[in-house]
Image 1 (cartoon, helix red, strand yellow):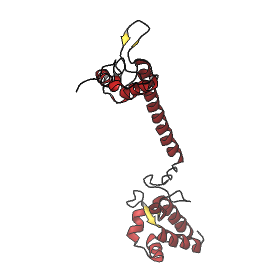
Image 2 (cartoon, rainbow, N blue to C red):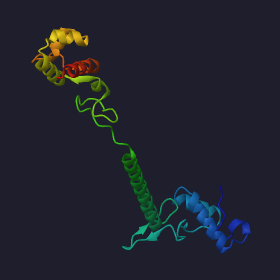
Image 3 (cartoon, rainbow, N blue to C red):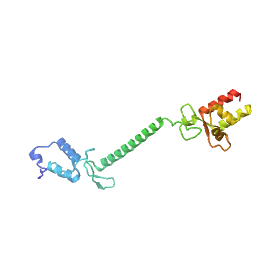
Image 4 (cartoon, helix red, strand yellow):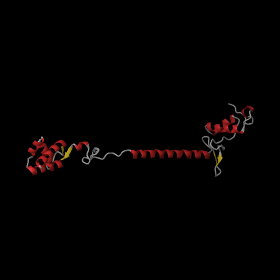
Length: 202
């Protein structure tokens, strides 16, 4: 495709300075590189150095040490550096905001319920120090102490005691023996044993 000479822009039509400036900015925005900018401007008959889309200065500018530095992405090197700095800061701000949101959500999350004070494996039931399973059982030590109190008050045998509460004597022996096999007694049976202790005044 032929180019329009800069001396005769757009087939003889006069181009104002403002239109020329706008055209150069448009080219700088949409061109892929500086060569593309130059080619498009030459086709428009405007020629010359493309302008930065941010500051309006030429894309190629001198650095403080005298080096000539070309711009990128439609910006001179100074504006491009500022653009990258802004993007990095925006990314940091977004990361900080996300971390703050996560921390706020963590603080708002309710604390986990305390563990059962007996088994330390399950969560304690609300309003209790025990989990639902441990609340249904009584430790062997408490059963042993209650049986000893009943025997001290009445000299009742374990077999007679078991018969009164409707329990297998062997099972009760397994709980109260020194090297007990069973570690707990069901709450319902313990309540019957406690009622027996109250009945005999133990």
